[in-house]
Amino acid sequence: MKYTVLIIDDEEPLREAIRLLGDWEGLGVGQLLEAADGLSGLRMLAEQRVDLAIVDMKMPGLNGAELLQTAQQQYPGLLTIVVSGYNDFEYTRQAIRSKVVDYLLKPVNRTELNQALRKAMDVLEAKRRQESDFIAQNITLNLSLPGLKEKMYLSILERSFKQQANEAFLPLIGADDKANRFVVVLLRILNLDQIRRSRFHGDTELLHFAVSNVVNEVAGAHFQAFSFANPKQERELVAILTMNGGGAADAAYRALHQVNAIAATLQRLFGIRVAAGIGGPVAEALDMAASFEEARSALGEMDLLRMNGAAAVRAAAADHRGSSSRSEVGVSGERSSSKAAARSHTGEGEGRTPGAAASAEKRQPKEGLSLPGRMAVIRQALAGDNLQQASSIISELARSWQDADRLSLGEADRIIREGIVLFGDLSLALGVPQERLPAGSEESLRSRGLSLDFATFEQFAALLQRLLSFYHEQLRAAQAVQKPFDIADIKAHIDRYYFEDIKISLYTDKYFLSREYLMKLFKQQFGCGIHEYVQKVRMDKARELLDDSALKIQDISELLGYKDKNYFSKAFRNYYSLSPTEYRSSKGNS
Image (cartoon, rainbow, N blue to C red; front, side, top):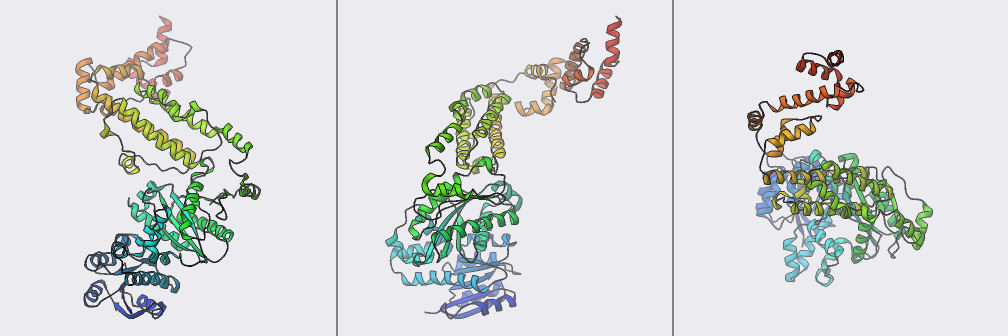
């Protein structure tokens, strides 16, 4: 049975290019229709039985996104391929939601067009070939090939794939070709929150689409690539690289260089920084689960202390024989030495020899210098509203991890997750209501202004400090609500911290009271305003310090919180009608 394809594009040159480049006869296309705009395209869909539509996203009047939305509702069985450019992501948002078969970047070339058409024809063939209710249900739920392939890959990677029930779909991922080798790559976006805000208007889905776009385009002549967002971790994308022909070592070598090219392109185009773990090549599609686990391990074992903020890539074994060989490359870094790689390939690599194990054990931080081991002291500090002391403990921990000379990316992730749980439990124990605390997911943390971005050890350490500060603020707010307000607390704070930069907002934020109310209450109680009282305390202290002739006026100025000696002298004269020097002279003459 022949298929009908409809090209919907307002540009005649592009329609002509698609007509000339497509292998229509070889693909089993019997009728090729054209529409010069979106409205005409919808009319033709209503009049003709169309199997596949090729839609340009940027058209006047009814654009591609609007057309896809309508077609999805009115013609749910229609397969679509979209045509767009790198800078047209705002137009392709609907393409993502409509689950198109594939997308083509302008200018369209022969190879990419026919690959996309073949994907669509494979889906149509599978729909017509299968009779079982199970397959029919899968086809109904997965009308687009990307969605179907993503579900297949995920079930394989999670080891839940039912081969007998899904046998007909294996050719869609190249599992029927014995010459194919498969490599699984795990990409982690290190600066996801920053890039999503600055380049993608806060849209994670759009950012994932952009990364997948680059992965699929940069994979090169040696690989076919298919990538998708990890549904369990929004910072991660899974890429499947399929190479036809060649040995395992060749596939591993080419995969490493292709992934480095992908990482460099993402950084150049969008400023996206990634860490990538590459699994070993496998010859059987169902063995991709092992390659995925190797990719996960390679990613987690990256040394954060040696990541400089640029993209970093770490590859697993050159073949799938259970080896632990590793090759680590940063876009601006160097590959590990061939001698070390050779030792690792023979089972004598990282963490395998007794000497290496002893060395690694020696480098580990002491048990007391772990976050759980220091939580009792941190709790005591926060309960006493001493953020500085708690912060110094986090800094001490960071130095211990640096001194250990290795902190893996996986270990850093574990510490962050551990910190969120421990700080959350501590806050609950000290009276913070549950509703004031994040649930622990990235989305929950982000909604409270906390980003988990980090690409270097310094950024990781700063993130721990931000988490500490956030939970400290929740504690202060809870304590302010629980404790009856006493205006004398403000006076006591000024008496103790007169040398700091004291602002009214410090108290309005702490006690959740208005500026006007606080100032009125303070004046009623103590006979002067808050600023006037700060000035009085400083000036009283200034006279006391000036009585000590060993102290220089510059020193006294700094002790009182004045950054400028002249400003202090002017404030003193305005208050006492004589300068600090004149005051000292008067005391000396008395």
